[in-house]
Amino acid sequence: MKELQPSLEQTKQTIVERIFRYAKDSPEKAAIICKDETTTYRDLAELIFSVSLFLKKEGIEKGARVAVQALHDKHCIALYYAIHLVGAILVPLEKNAPEFRAKEIVSDTGSKLVFSNLSVDDQNWHTYAEIEKVCEKKIEYSYDDLAFPDIDDLCEMVFTTGTTGKSKGVLIRHSNISWYAYALAKAIHMKEDNRFFITTPLNHAGGLRRTHLSLANGCALIYMDGLLNLKKYFDYIERYHATALYLPPVAIRLLINSTKDELHRFADQIDFVYSSSSPLPIGDCEELKKLLPNTRLYNAYEASETPGVSVYDYNSDRILHNCMGQPNPGVELGILDENGNIIKDAGTEGQICVRSPMNMAGYYNAPDLTAQVMNGDWYVSSDLGVFDEEGNIYYNGRKGDVINIGGYKISPIDVEETALLSGMLKECICILSENRQGYPILKLLVVPQEDGYDPKVLIRFIASRLEPYKVPKEVEVIDEVHKTFNGKLDRKYYRK
Image 1 (cartoon, rainbow, N blue to C red):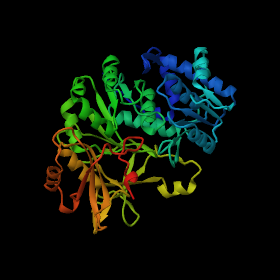
Image 2: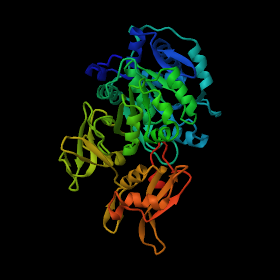
Image 3: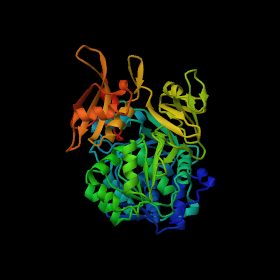
Image 4: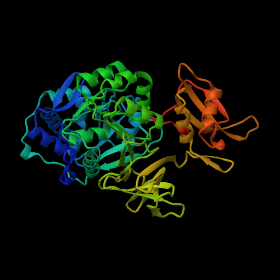
């Protein structure tokens, strides 16, 4: 496959404009493969145009918010980009959000229209069945008559913690995601005919950004809703010749634990695997290298507020522990030190700061909260990091996750990764607990492998590799580790 040659000119064009360009130049090229159906770029452009006319008829204008229940479906994607095309702002909703929560978000965001499979007695709520009828008409259009939104306009409001519990609406401009599609394609050496397999929800940044990335670069998307059916997952890889996989760390661990032989079958087919949201345990990196020796394996740093920050290919001569690589094109990284200065000195740990054309416009209706994380044009994250002498950034956990016992500061990630290297565990999480006397201690919650688990041997293994103060005093077996919507360990859930 020929490598893409992203151009800075791409950053001046919205994603929806690029879709229509591909529909004009490569009309029969596959854009979306889902539910045993292939949608070409011409098909997708026609769907987007037809839905955009419907939105205008319903009174949607520039700046209006439109809420859409996120489905792995061509009609959902047509809705997304039709909203972009008319200059409105997409508010993606979780697929399984209960009616009360969906209504709450719609009300809070002032969404003028809603599209979902919920049966709500409200003239502003539309079903997907209505959109399917609109799409059946396939209204013809002339490319020269199309009017695309301004690159600096707002286009999306994506929630940081999904649609359950308190969440922040991150405001995204067209320029943010256009830069992302350019910078990341360049950083990971995307190919012209990559087929990107996405199973994560399309209302969250992970699935949504990878959709923008693929369609902005004329590649194909393969959609499947979740990883519950692993047989179907590998069948899709084979049947639709997937060449790129988006796998959060928890998904990689699942595949390694359950189906490593199946994954190895595609060692000569998979061009790259992209993972984000948190660093991969070093044991998983090593195992994936064995299974996919010829594949680029990317560990990426990004946040809801700033995508495409950095990537690191750990399928190299040596694995740099917790390394997230060097900044992608257009990105500048810094560390907020204890004196409040943003520095780039190697060896100084602090909060990771990002200056980038991909930084969010702000939080919706939350100027004070926005001010807390923006230092001029720098985004100040809650992630702790450090530079090495070569300019690589390393992720050392969240600011609030460090456990302090008797003056010793302990990163739970160190304990968890060491425990996983024992080979006895499927997953684990290190938490702060108390002994019978009420003194704080480290406790390790574990989900053992089916065979070979011995808690005493596990503790000896950890003690042989870590400082004494990092060795858990208690180990407890649990059924599963509680996680956030995007597969991260949910540390807040275990805090008292």
